[in-house]
Image 1 (tube, rainbow, N blue to C red):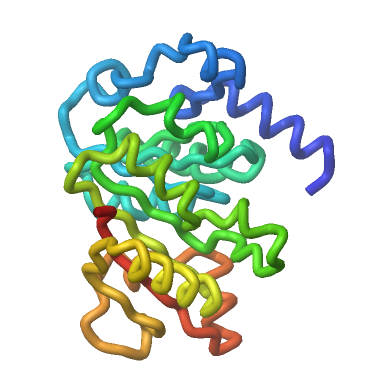
Image 2 (image 1 turned 45 degrees about the horizontal axis):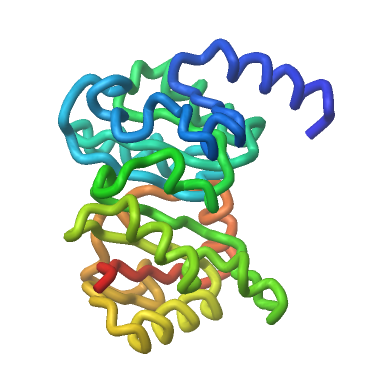
Length: 224
């Protein structure tokens, strides 16, 4: 994407009602007004709150919002030029139960209060295969601890990935730490019984993976 195009998207994001872009200082200093108030102030209802972490172009967040109008969705990514597409689609199609938050995932507990979130989706994260990159792996113990802080006690997490490495790593970690695995499938499109929200929504990259015959894996779990 050219820098002109990026700038245009950043500018447009600023005008979108469904895009929130707090500064790092605002978050860390405790000045972010929506923390603990997402449903009351932003969505103006008390529906379950669902996050998609690393939402990319926002296709999954928008797809889930269409499928579940009785839930509120927030797509989170640091790359605003990417989720511009999802935000714009939501506005064009009048989908009011989805918004986009531009922050780094590691700052999640500064953007949401304890027990504020009902469910988290992690879709196609970078598996960070090299050992020295493990601290950035989005299902490592450090990140799971952050998610626990914002999730309700019975909150659910979903991991959907084309990386068999990430799938195996996460399953091993969940077993090792005694978390509750509700459902796990290493090839959701070829095995029966996959939840409809897993196979019924496809991102652009996901359809490319499927064309290459790459299996798409999925885990649904709760933290102990």
